[in-house]
Length: 99
Length: 249
Figure 1 (cartoon, rainbow over the protein chains, first blue to last red):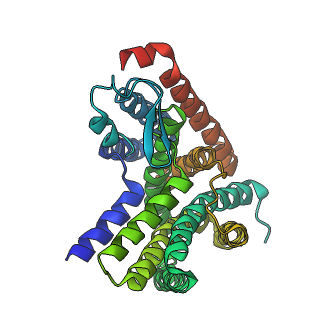
Figure 2 (cartoon, rainbow over the protein chains, first blue to last red):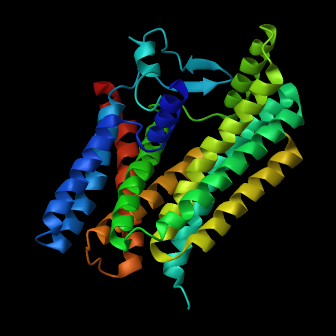
């Protein structure tokens, strides 16, 4: 059972990194599919505006998780350019976007 | 039958570049295993991974012909959107300094340290090492197979896309075997950025084709979509790097 769950997680992980982004993309596709039934060219516009739009919104939101200072991964250590001590929650960063 | 270069070039380059990234990642793990336990378990694990991949392709490949074209384009398009935008999102966040860059030498060091630690507990290390190599090859290989199918299946471009992927894998294997160390100098994030842009563009195109959207310029529209994703991605990176946003966060 553990192996099946592991395989499923790995397969899902190929496509879903951030659940909100995946959900937003799915909503855009569903909207496009609904619009396509009436006007196919309008469905294209929904896809063209919606997909880059949700990506932009998602990364900007994820950027707000950034710790103060610049983090650089180097040989197994996290070096913060002078600001790691000031970072409110490094654990939050490590389990944050894209980890 | 001649296939237009406007169809072939984006498919082959997307398959080549994404396979390059995946092959570098797989090579790092296989090298870590080889360093700790020698080439036998590393090689056997990698070969077993390749054999499993071949079986998956042989088993699922013929099923593609049975799926109606528009349904296939829609499913592949949506999966490509999820896959490509996942890569692009990560590349943007890395380029903006929100998450650290992927470091092959660090992955290599972590992998070898984990295997050595298991040795202290008297685990059957050859078996574990082979399994690590197998898993790396299978998981990274699955991504390569998906990209090849996704960019090639909708327009009969499976052979050129496979050739692009195989060329990338052969190149990485040859350089990796010659150097015997992780390919840390490959500009992985730049490649991921480019591949993310291309796969997202293919995703929009195929999803639209699946929904019967009459794209102006047909295949050439992919280049326009790529330009749009590139502009959005670069703008996001610049905005996140700007002092105002850093001050807010």
